[in-house]
Image 1 (cartoon, one colour):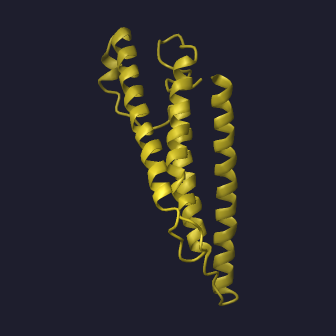
Image 2: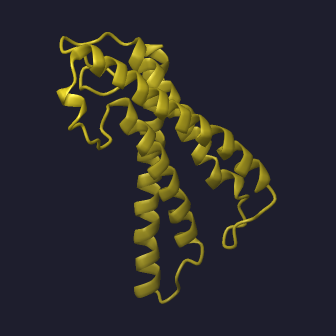
Image 3: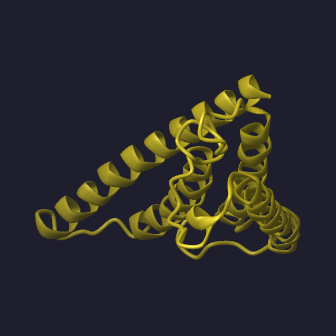
Length: 165
């Protein structure tokens, strides 16, 4: 499971970096085209928006792998180690349930919008919406891999106190 999780993390990083690079170059080109050549690129804003959606959704899933989402742990830190482990299981179950909803309804919404086209680039809206189920699937993989990972000395899940090693 650790190998699958590392593979998913690599895919997330690759897509995020590539999308960010394209978004930055495209936005720069749009500014140059608008202010220097007085001829803006009509489709650049839409492509940048779709890339930003993918970056956000995959970035959120990637943060789960390292336990980097913000949390309020006022109560959790005051629990005994046994209760803390049970609360970790409950929290992980809630995250998996939410990610499963993202996966299910994301596929549903993507499928329902397969014939809707984006206005500027004539792209099927299925592709931007696919970021939701992909992020849900990746989140589930990270949570499951985190529980298969070895527990550190404090009893928390994962080396950083998150759900991954």
